[in-house]
Length: 203
Image (tube, rainbow, N blue to C red; front, side, top):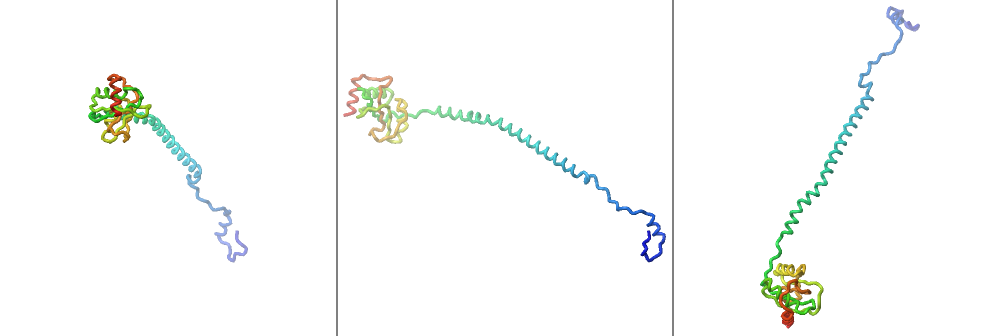
């Protein structure tokens, strides 16, 4: 359609323009991935979550195996410690130097106690045994030693007479002192000899 204000006379181009109706511009069609972008994002997120879940399940399974093996660890430790304990039990007792002077003190209040122990120890190989009587009675036997060099011998004597652990002390002048409170299981000598031995020790 020609404009009434158009200064030029209409020509064939104006006729073609009048014959064609007006229409809008066409847009290019969007690609497939852009049309379905939301669905692609959802599917990708689901795959990522599935992979993470599989890793978590696999990790839990491995932890279970380790926990199953844990109870065997203490057993292995006990097994390895058993030989050490056996080795400790097999250690030989301390050797006694039976030439070291030993003083037997009667602290049990029984006549002839020290003399009986003297005879018993001499029968077991102790070479120098003297006797004495304590001023006060005691309840438990004990072996004392003065110097460190006599510790093993004192401990051997303590084990022999059933006096437990030997103790270091300078209460007595003797290198090793056995404070006796009971008769030995297998005593030697009679009470008369024992009594003389105790008195002699006091003098």
